[in-house]
Image (cartoon, rainbow, N blue to C red; front, top):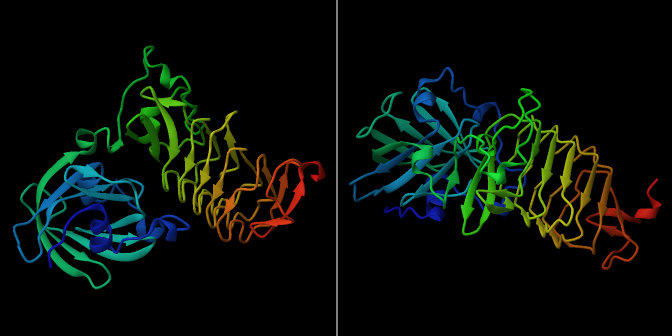
Length: 353
């Protein structure tokens, strides 16, 4: 069985894969998928590293499989010197093994020969639910910030300086009462062409203001699961240039109470499960520019009562407001509205108590 390590096959063949539209609630770092980096020696050796595997075994060939492990229990894969976006994989470390989960379900394991892996060491991968065995060797171990490029996730540690105006909106870390936390120390992001996608968060800040620009490029996207399960997050401000909030971007943020969009928002789409399980949300304003909202986008937001739409009725996915008590309020001149939308009653904004 030859395994070609494109992104799709890496996900499907190696760890069971997942279609992004099926991961409604995002990744699920339960107690089984949490990492204790301070006490687990293998964790100390692999978190923050990019590990590249090769094998000369023609029966089960591995060429340039890349693995990166994050401290919050997520992992990403890639090949040919390129790490891909986060697609729902999580992990748990048990002694010298990494147990891999796909959307919370067991999807294989990676066995290292010691708790301090090094180049040349053998690594056994057991793939998918049937745990088919593939054997490889470590070709490279590199610090993440030494291998990531403009086409992959940025993980920088720069200081704020006067000649970097794009960092002027550095947020306040309310938890630690530290002002002007550099964006590079707070957010993980990916640059593609002339735009920026936010793909993760590195610090436990309650309130985050995403800047309009990073490295002088416009932030246009909040990536899949970028803030999912960040229970420390209570308030987020999204700049006007963001056009897409991807699947499960804020899924299961249990303490998120406020999402603010800057004026003249260009937001076009809200992805599947984008705010699913945000139980502290009581109200939400949908910018006029939004054209589509994915399925289960606000499902299980148990406290959600008021949703205000400022434009025409967008294209709706299934179960947008499943298991909520929300009432929708819209402008009288807006088009495409009926008596219900997304399974919830629609009223005029003037009718709001």
